[in-house]
Length: 358
Image 1 (tube, rainbow, N blue to C red):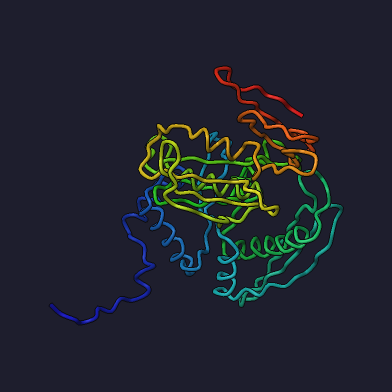
Image 2: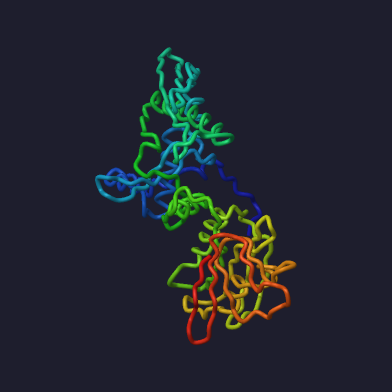
């Protein structure tokens, strides 16, 4: 046995596997799509592209972009140079970028930039960005500032890529394009924002109350992969405006039919609005924890505390369960509904549920 240290050249870590890169390139040239490639081939192609451009792969200079191809009528996954990439290319090729013009034209913001290379060659490029939202209203505050910066970045990106011979369409010109993350199996993973946007786009323009959510999943589910629990948490924390980190957690909670590890999220009013229950070792076939669901959605002192003239008082829109009879109190209402958009479900033995909307 030897204790001699082996020296590893740091640059070797970023060298692509030649065969994997060649196979991935053959596939891409034939299909224009990197979706579904094995992890080794995608990584090798990523490194090979960086190597050919002379840029540092450790800075993540390329994004994964998924878009709809109208010719094949399907989605395609491609590599896309981001701002880090164009900044490195501008430095490597000694391109000096100068702002020529910026102004607002109607609802559009216009930026013109000029680039000069050491040999004296010059080029100009222009970028436009709409300063209104999906409803046609003017952008304000931080969204307005972000739009201006994005237009400057877009103009410089197009200029630099054109000057080094990489004329690539802008991501916002590709049909249904979006930046995505890709897992080790080549599967596209949505971001929390993208999951949230899917929900919001079901009813564009809706600004009302969002329902409380309770999630259940067994971590040994082979029908619906348990990874979906994490994606669901990303989706609903984004929709409900909550941080990804739960307010509190516990482990080993014994419910009626299974043991659970639980995560809880409270809103600014201190009400539990999102819960995630994981059953260790459980498969797809799980017994519904009806009593726990009724506790979460039901009328009780924690969810709907009363006041001087009511036993229970509903002050937020949403769905609520009446699990049983209410014990009357003299001179008090049983349930006071002080919000619009309330759905009250009344549980009755052997007759299912009665739905009452207010």
